[in-house]
Length: 186
Image 1 (cartoon, one colour):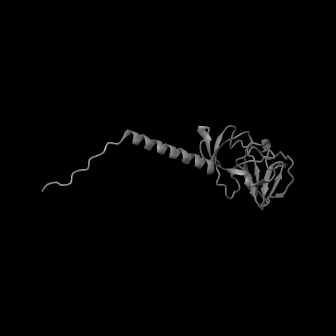
Image 2 (cartoon, helix red, strand yellow):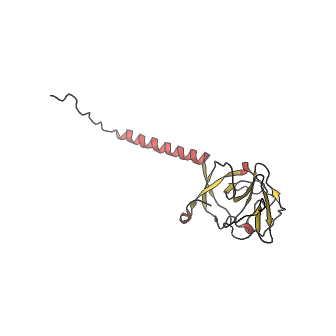
Image 3 (tube, helix red, strand yellow):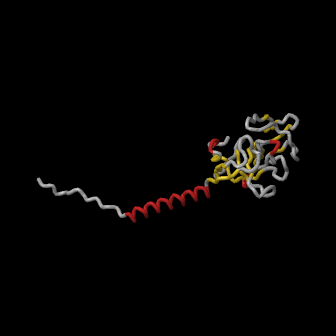
């Protein structure tokens, strides 16, 4: 019995075709990265010391632009043009409908009558600014404080006050720099 079917011959790949495939893959990957970082994520440089010990000056962080419902403890990047042209990083302390009060004599923050346990702060909250509490967070807003409470300008100051959710650029999800501290931000 004669073999009528012969093994198909392998075609030699055209080197130009190979290069075009690589270029097309590279361009697709670059466009995908640009779109992802344009619409979903953003890299931000931390400026100032208001979030010490959690974040430090020149840390590079990634924020998720898929900001949904914020909750206590979220670290967010926001823009408040009445205060600064630069974006600022703060921690969400209370959301709409919650009541915030601060006892500056003992440095405690209270939300809805419960004293917050805040292991992330540098020191107790002693700096008043022009805060007059208790205050209830209005609909569509959040109340934010820096972790370095006595060196932070935040919702205690009337120029910042309650933060409209539309001013939030995103939630901090990851620190990229410095390399020895790379990881999730809590």
